[in-house]
Image 1 (cartoon, one colour):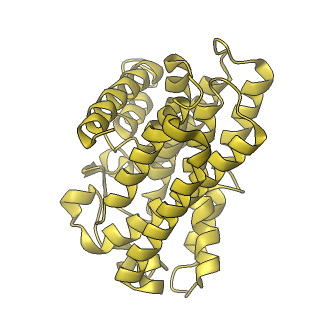
Image 2 (cartoon, one colour):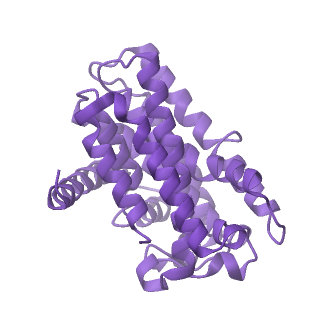
Length: 298
């Protein structure tokens, strides 16, 4: 598939997910209006929608229904949006810019931002628990559990706790990978697995291969983010550039150096692609997205 084909597919999928989010989020004129306005402000018209794109690409492996994939994509993106709202608050990373606009607590207030995160998280699970055409209840229960594990103490929230506790400390590579496999990688991994759960069942071996791809790409995504935090400007990132270094946070760049971090991202990318070999041409879209994720810094 060509790059032009990828861009066309990404644009169409991003708009499809945007429309689904528009429909799933509460109307801003419905009480409590400020909460609903802030939920929409923090979720809509922002970000690259990498996690929904991965869910849709994984869905191509199993001929998944687009409506079910949209439900999964919305649930994952709501969890992601809630994490960003909370992450930007003064008690966490204390940032004023996200996706090129003022962060939620700046545009509204801290109490509203806290409630936005709470409401987006619960709405994600409400969406994922509604019946899906062609998906058995037991499979749907597994999907809910997958997202919950990725979001909580053993996933994203746990990784964030380690991140906050690591400010000013030097972590070795094993410790850094453990943190980011939870903080960033868990939700990316969940997006891929949930997309694959929306269609024809995979074998245990195929599931393991797909899971390995998702783990390596989740880590590669974070390495590339660390590189971009050093090399890209605020306008390009849509958030404050150089924030990790300013806050004395351990990153792959601070641990390895810039060029070594880029090389590590390439190694993770190659390992991820190798894991897709059992799927042949059906994994072409996932391979394209892997190219896109890693190429952001090169």
